[in-house]
Length: 116
Image (cartoon, rainbow, N blue to C red):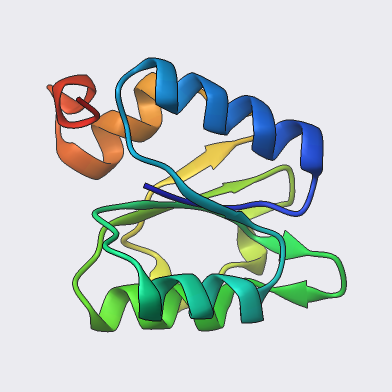
C-alpha cells in the first residue's frame, strides 16, 4: 500500500495503522516526484493519495496508478470539486482518513482482509 501524504504525523499514523493491520506499506511519499519514484521501484497493490501536496496536486501520481491498473483513493480536506472529472469514478475519503472505508473502496466490502 502506497501512502502519498505530505503531513508527516498523519502519514506516520496511517502507516502505523496499516502495518498493524498486516499491510506492507510503501512510503510515505511527500511529493509527486517521490511517489512516482516509489511506483517505478516498488510492488504496489493500492494507494492512498492526499490531493494537495505542498504546492502541487497529486494528479500525475493518480494518472500513473490508473495506467498501471492499481486501485487508489483520494484523501483530502479540500472540496471534491478540485478533482478532475477524469477521476470522478475514484473514491474520495475525507481527512483524517478512516482506513476501513479506504480498504472497502480499494478492495471491496471485505477490504480489511486484503490488507493482510
